[in-house]
Amino acid sequence: MKNRLSPVREIDAKAPTCRFWLRFAASRLLRVVLVLTLVSILAFALVSMAPLDPVDAYLGPNIFHISPEQRDLVVARWGLDQPPLMRYVTWVGHVFTGDLGVSPIFNQPVATVIATRFSASLALMTIAWTASGALGFCLGLVAGTWRRSWAAKIIRVYAYMLAAAPTFWIAIILLIVFGVVLGWTPICCAAPIGLTPDQISLGQRLSHIILPATALTFLGIAQITLYTCQETAEFMNSDVAIFARAQGASRWDILRRHAIRHAALPAITVQFAGIGELFGGSILAETVFTYPGLGQAAVAAGIRGDEPLLLGITLFSAAIVSIGNSIADALYHVIDPRITLAS
Image (tube, rainbow, N blue to C red; front, top):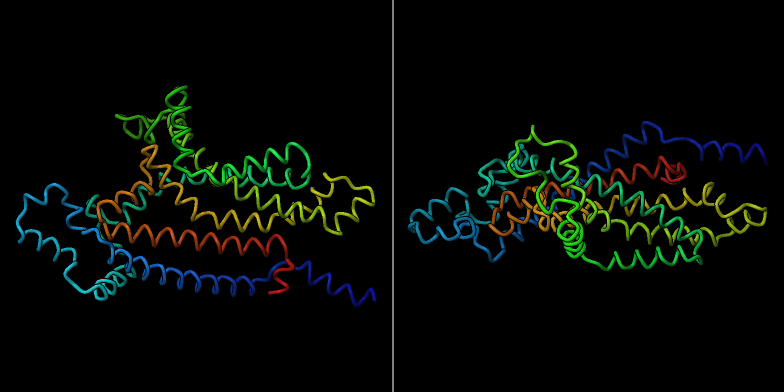
């Protein structure tokens, strides 16, 4: 019997092979391509059917100062006089060459606008994503392990309140309390106004990013806390945990040796799946704090009918979410090799 079981244990303990990772990467790449294709079709259809006229939104009050012939020239230059299907085929052809078009409101290539704005949003989203994941996972472990304690009840109430609170409301409360009433932090922008980039210190950048990053952190803490709490509580009531406690193991020992790995997989799923929600929250937070990131550019593109920029941001955000989900799937096989064996 020992000889029969030992090969199974060896297989279970094996790490994913190079051949497995190649197949995994190919399948996830195909999935990302299919997702981006569907997103591009849906986004282009929604933008084309929008009641907002992009030329009128772009010109604004200046619409009364141009002639109909000049307006027709703008329409022809943007290709809006072509059928939607032809415009989509033309746009996709340019996308395959790396050309996402030119943003009318910024008068720059869409790729340049996305790269510039995303570099500002990246620091904000990275801080919020990391902090919310770490804090939410720790709070969920505590609430799930000592479920009947006062600390667990406070954590659950706190998580439910955050889950129900909209991002813009949290951002406004933080802005009023810490920016206006207490005056501890700046109330807008990513840096002091009137200074060149080489004159801005690291401390000044951090003081401007702390409020929007805190608002986004609150957005991500609630979900991962509740999911981790539920998974940890279920494991603590399982036969494995009951048997370990019968042998004299404490709750801390069970948490440290078994429950953390058990709760890590759903936590990773929620964390990486929340990238899209984090991006949506950043749009609201950047709008409240006038933070010059990709979210604020998306709002400007939607209000002023900048179709190339709006489509480019939609495609870029879909790619980020798809890549994040693929990374989560890859981490599954690293954390628990049994998933690789089942695959």
